[in-house]
Image (cartoon, rainbow over all chains, first blue to last red; front, side):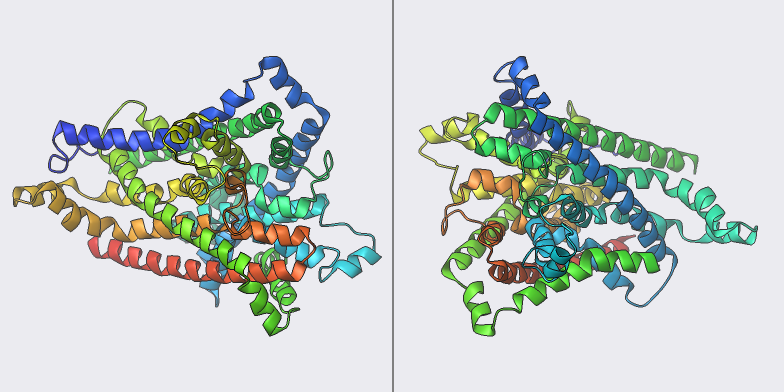
Length: 283
Length: 262
């Protein structure tokens, strides 16, 4: 930790004013919305809250959300590791284009992420007639939701790992190879231990987004209650039916997930900071 | 390597190609008519205008928050530092209904603003407020590491040479954090332009008034106007590509600036 500066805003008044305005901004824009979720969820009492959560449609939404995460997170984990491996350990033509493509879902509207699958697989879509002929339903069904979720979440792991693996270079791997390790041994014994914390961080963010994605999933889901509604979509339906207590009750579960994600994220960051300090002290 | 490219093609390239192919179903005059219809123009104006304004607010507030988090000590600092990422972690639909309730006529803030005669829900102001929430972490997270690396001795040196605090900020600190702050600004802008979930509840979605461009796509889809949806999608996507290009250039600039110092 660096010593606080003496020159800028050294006067206690200025310092207090800066801290106060920053905290006011955070209080109004972050804390109040978060508190609103829990207050509204419990505004009808605990029994109404519980009733909204154990209601069959809410449970179906919970199951679907977990299913989506269980499919899309591992797939993106594998993709993230292979993509960052390729990008950081090899040089090839079109590498920067590949990196841009990986970043793309971050800067594309979630609605467009959903739209592209509807245009491809929907009834009027490019592959629509073929799919109808073979009785395959992708859009307005679970496969479409999975595809859209994979699309919006696939940068998370790769984004986390690329800088990490680039920094580590290839020396350890080359040493392992020269000592006779097979490709797989080298990966599990050398590469994976080096990236495990970064990987965990990426998976954490990927999972939070996979469970909470709304825009993309909303476009491909078709909103069939109890069948293709994930938790965020269930929240929307309840809210639009003016069933506010139930909407906020389900929303509070998602907000709770977000808080756990933030907590784990902070723990990983503190761990990282502590390691850096320790490494710095031993030098 | 092969897997990476295959996965990328199936998940990203193929569907994106589908979007362009679908949009080209329209003849050129049809495309233009759909792309610049008055309702579409109003939606772009709202989406890009409020996103720009929200990103500007986030630029100022983000630098302030980053500064306070890096340089000062105060209670619950770690909690607040962690909380800055809330808009990334909180599902957009949850943020959307919370903001709509908070700023609604009966909400905690909405009531106060109502007395002052300010209406937020179902207006462009509401859209902008939601976008400020969504973009809040970007500038903080890009500026924070740069401020951490910035040696306070530089500021002391400036002060000892007779600079006022404002001069020290504009001449020493601002140039150092500028590339990072602008990158954060561009990221917040890009995110805000396409944002959907946290906006639609507070916006009320009145055509020509508080209807954002992503919602227009959803409405066209619901009316089975796939080509129309694809046309608006292509316009938005082209804008995203331009912003992405700008961000990459900004980041390159930031890296060069960082490299000069170390």
